[in-house]
Structure formats: C-alpha cells, structure tokens
Length: 90
Length: 290
Image (cartoon, rainbow over all chains, first blue to last red; front, side, top):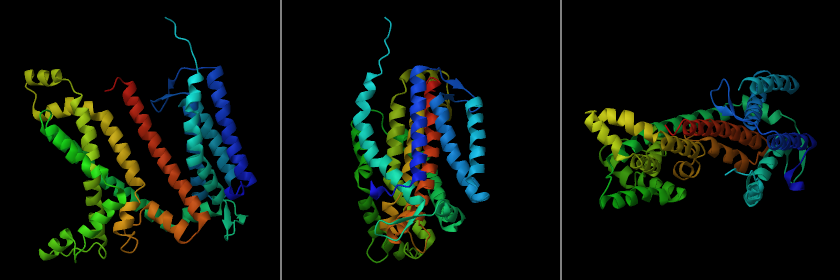
C-alpha cells in the first residue's frame, strides 16, 4: 500500500464517501422509494440526489478555493446547505 | 403472475466491480493522494494540503488548455454532427450499395489513433505530403508546424475525417428504424422535404444523436494521441489540449502533485458533462422515446 502514498486526511475522505454509499445502498434496499421530479424536471432517487450533492460539493469546494481562498470549513458549510437544498427540492 | 424481488443477480456484477476497482478506483485514489502531497522522488511524500489545487486554479496554463479544449470540442461537434446527419440522409436505404457504403464509412473508424496521426502528419507535410505539397504548389501558404491556424485546421479536418462516420452510422441506424408508415402519411399530407426531416426524421434520431454527441464530446475532450503525433501540442502551445498539457506536466516535468490536482479537476468536468448527457438521454427515453 506504500505506493499509493496514503495520508490520513485522504483516507478519512474516502471512508466518508464509502460509508455514504453503503448507507444509501442499505436505505435503498430497506426502504425502497419511487423516483420523484423536482426543480430540475428530472426523475431522481435518493442515490441520484447523493450523486448530485457530492459532485456539486466538489465544484463548490474548488470555486471556494479559487475565489475566496483556502478556508475549506466554510466551503463545507455551503456544501451542507447545498445538500439540504438538493435533498429538499431536486 | 406476481413477480418476486431477487437481488442476487447483483453478484454477477462482482467481476466487473473487481476489474473497475483495479483499473480505475485504486489509481484514482492514488491520484487524490498525490494531489495533497509533494515528492522529490524515492517514494517519499510531504503533506502540502490544498496548495496544488490553489496553484493550479490561479495558473493561466490550465485555463488556457481548457479554453483550447472547449473550442476544439465545440468546433468538431458543430461540424461532425450536421455533416454526419447529412451523409446518413443521403446513404442508400436498400440495395447492394448499402453494404458498400457501410463498409466504406466504417473504414476510418478501424484505424488506430496513432496511425491516423501519422497519416495526417505525413499527408500535411509541405516537402513530401500530398496535401501540403499540393497546397504549396497552388500557392497557398500552409505549414502546420509553424502556423497556429494551419495546425488547428489540420487537427479539425483530421478529426472530422476520422469520426464523422461514427455520427453518420448512428444517425443512419436511427433513420432505418423509422417505419414506412410515417413517410406514407407525410406523402399523403404533401409534406415538404424539410417538414419530413424536421417533424419525422429528426425527432426519431434524437436518441441516437444524443449518444453520438456524448461519444464525440467525450472522445474529443480527452483527445491526446492524434495532436501529440501531428503537432506535439505546437506550434508553441497553440494545440496543447488538456491531456497533452497534463502528460507534459506529469511525465515530462514529473510534477506529480500539480498534475494530480489538474487530473482531478479534469475528471470532475468530464464526470459533470457525462452526467448531464446521461440524464438528458434517460429522460428522453422515459418520455416514450420521443
């Protein structure tokens, strides 16, 4: 594993994403849902909304880094607001 | 009969999952790890946090390559999609010429990328190439190794030559799937040629055209081999597209950290665009294959 040059922060990052994926898979099996249409006018399930949240969060973090500077905890607050909005309205 | 839910078939996906893990997920994780560290070789890494991302976001080099890449993809899509549809509309629908056309159309698709690059690299040379020499004889000042515009034109014409067939074949498949009844109805209604195209053929081709656009966009956005062989990213940086710049940075300069940050941003853009196309495509399907 040494060749992969692991660090604790990146390991935690991937663990969080992996646990999110597992949680949402379990949720999808335990509590199946019907897709719904939100403001994007596309059918989404919980999993789709998670994907939109994660991808959007990556861009929010990059935009924050480029426009504001390296204050990522604040960017994460924006991401959480974005996540809440996606799960509520998309 | 009531259907039973059985999720065990998912286990059949396991081999693919293992393959993708080794070929994509693990390398991608390694790239993420590189992007937050610096190295001086010897497999020794030092934590630098998000510095590489900050540096790359403030660097004109990446934005310039992105701008060139977007312009390139936009131009080839704007040429290949209408041209492919036009060719498909004029291909024979039945008879012996169908096979001849299909074989001729698929020939450029069978040629490997580096061979296409080599063909055009020689074809365009002023001293020995057929195209370059002819243009020079006609008095046209053409030299793709020195003039940025000539280099761009060469790359665009090469890509159009290589990939328009794909769009044409997909559009042709879409056209063939339209039942004759539609055309008969159009004839009864005395619809013009344009009306037939606009209200019958184009709507029926939307699905395959979306696939064609997605494939051509992805391929042109990741293009590496052909420009590398023909122009090497030059003259100057005129045809240095994203992947050429990335390889220069990662393997030429061995700047693993900045190159990793660059790759991740590149990957995110591709992921976003693919998702948008995929969503549009599946939504077209769910609206009854309009």
